[in-house]
Length: 276
Image (cartoon, rainbow, N blue to C red; front, side, top):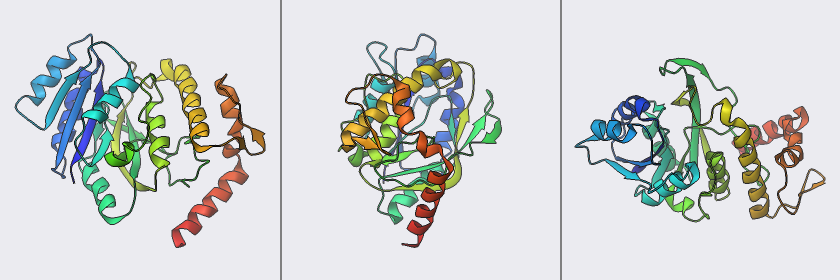
């Protein structure tokens, strides 16, 4: 079962060595790494090419012009040849058994995806803390990953992704959320309660504070599109708008999912699901 590690890079070459060594240290050996550079303005390509030179498992591609995250990740998926795929940011790293643990779940269960716990790290990739919000989910038509419960390391079957309309190439952020919701509409997902992903926090990270306002808008757009795909016209007694106008309008519809009664009922359903 071949695994495609997908990397969309833009000006993160200086961090790539940690990413690279975490890939070649994997205990699962049947993999390829698809790297798509989105016209970096630094020396990313030279640094990446220097590290991966001579290793045919690393396949490097470039965009003709800067297109953004959605376009670049969509392109990486088109280039992937593995049965299982997973995105790894070039400034992050994998735990050495990340692929092994993930592939094991596909061999033992009828699932379309997996996800794990992550470790937040400082700019030098030294572990700082766990992201406590990641947990087992109830994957029904009203799951929108709000609040965030699915994060890295998210892996999925390439054939299942190909059944969807694919990632929205116009998105500059919230691309992972778009992926999660589309893939999870096709089947079950397994939560791996292990820290398989090292997430580096640094000033220029794409998902850091300066980008959060835009990310919120894009996340709302992703959720709205999920409403439409799933044929949802009403949520918790409130009508879903016909057209997308403002992100807060979308988040207000899902505010009930943050309330204690809803969370208790959801937890009970997950417990009962385990005994089914």
